[in-house]
Image (tube, rainbow over all chains, first blue to last red; front, side, top):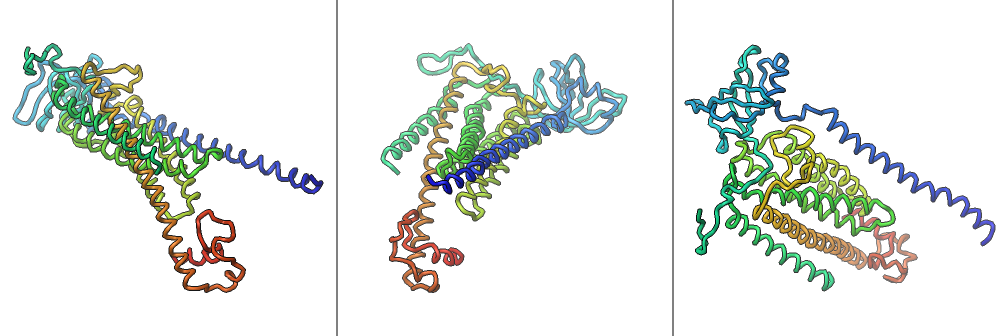
Length: 161
Length: 277
């Protein structure tokens, strides 16, 4: 190798080393940006992405909520459901508290006692615990259990009890 | 396509067909109705497996291929094509996730659609990867396009963990994971559980088959593009040189040793032609 080529090699070497370093820097910037997006979504938006307030949250923030429309989540109290001409009256419970709901509009198919629901509506006044809603959504659980686990099939293939 | 690749595609396709048929049979006839949901529970064997394919198989593969493309040691158009194929299949599965979810939501929740975190982030995912597909259509040099798309795929992939954890981070109407929950406890049992498992396998096989076929289409369309360029170049060559200065020193076709594209023309002539296309 001549002196001239050795010199060019020496000049070229740092440049070649600089490229991966720039790549690494780009990668670090990219990862930081991605982390920032996730952080902003989780922390910045935070609870504003919550779909509903639970019964205890709604009662705790009652003065702030006033009569504005929001979504309220609670479990339908057994024995409290009364079908009305308009829809249904019932109570929802959560965290040891209860709220009386007066709903206009027919409830969905799966609406029944002991099921968690999200109702859309508002308190009638800041002093009252009566919640007037015009929509019920059923919030089902992630657990799936066979309806009749004790049922067995007979030799004919028909279900027998 | 080599004979082996063809066999792999065929076997995967057949396996996908058989497992899907089995899932339909078990899901519709063998498994019992559930408490509360009754017969609506049968969507369990379709909706989560479709979402699994969209989020983790398709976009996971797309993100991995993009990384391997951007990584200089593994850079190859193979990863670009594989990533693009995975995204395209993923977009179809994301749309199916939204459709099956909507069909399930109406009778169970009472609404076709609502802006709860899980649903909103999934819709955003669809839009992000549709953006990726739009970006692929922007005319550019193959390497430039591949790099752009790889970065776009990685950016869009950020939404995948957001979709996954949306039900844990926020209060949403969508229930939490039946399989992918914080404790990783399976919340479904017996024949319902293994039918769900089979559903996951079936949809994954459908995904693999679709990606294999889509990858082949990508290779073929690239080949057609090259062939068309070659044809128009040779037609132009037959018309006779229009730029004497550029063709003056050109040897006979194919003699310059630059057989990369199989083009019979030296580069200087290809330049003005490229502009004419």
